[in-house]
Image 1 (cartoon, one colour):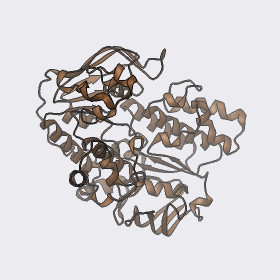
Image 2 (cartoon, helix red, strand yellow):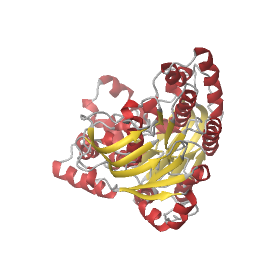
Image 3 (tube, one colour):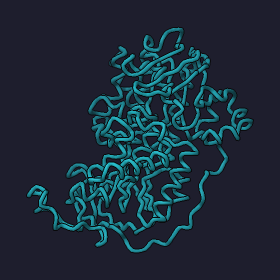
Image 4 (cartoon, one colour):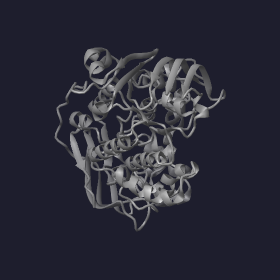
Length: 495
């Protein structure tokens, strides 16, 4: 069904291949777990199989990659892909329309499409109306919507191959179980469908898979039955960054300090994007200074919305966010601001601050890294905030060099941020905020897409920031992260 012979792909403008010397065979109906460290090209392989890598203007392909004996570009519609970033797969404005879109394009009988849309919504545990705007879904809900769309297409005569790229990355435990069950149900009715899953949470999929293929920088480093590979090559996999089930996370446990005085707090806070449609309401929250606070809770409960509101980027629908005296900017130098902003400025309210005030006080890493990239090179992306603050070029170069080294991005300094892997993009997005050394940092799913090694590096980096006396607030479903960095926990519950 799938064959690769010395296949490589190099993105335009990059000297190092994203995938190098790939050799493998996958038979019809096989279930394969594709593992490997962050940045070895797992997502690129899936994009190659789907035929969406683009032409010569986007990159260079060498060797052979075939699906059913043909180049993947001739098999579009037969290989389905649920991508790492669900936002990149949203096409239409309403949930039902988006799920039906692929089946409609494949000519499925309209009388069958909408009943199947409702069945697949239920199968993936996405309890929303079909006319819900896709813009109002959380990241985890969008992942479920993308999987539901792929399941609907199964009934339209394809795809023959289903590729899932970290399908449970932003889901809560209940959501992970629902998505896995939906895939199991699909396979039970379509046993000839070939399934390829890229996932760092190995234990979720291990017992469902026939085989594990592990990628390294120069091709396949392990290939065989799941149990054999995970036990016989345990040490090699750990060194490569694979999360081997049953092995403790590689991080030192911190002594959790007792929360002290708050650096910012909220009173009777109501959050949301639209008046009359609050996501959460009447919240009284305090964020203690110089400790790590984790915000947890089920998908769609409003964790990201709360973080954006506390960080001064989303205006409260009601109530207030107040920052402590030591974090407030001085309002005496605002002659350069528009008169409207000068009139509305309140030192205690971060929603009235200029962006320059936020840069060195409250930094935010968004849930989807690509939403905050504005430059064409990794190096320049890390320098954006420093340039805005008026740093000298020599200072900027020194600071950027330090961050590239710390985040393991030195070899990618000249690369386009949008050609990085999901894990590399996440580290870059963290670096863009760290560059200006804000006193308070909000991180939305900071460990998304990280292998075992880069996860440990990120946790160590956050611990160092806390030791400097700064404050970290993280939205996360990562239980290991909460255990190590859960000095203070805010658990949101459904309304």
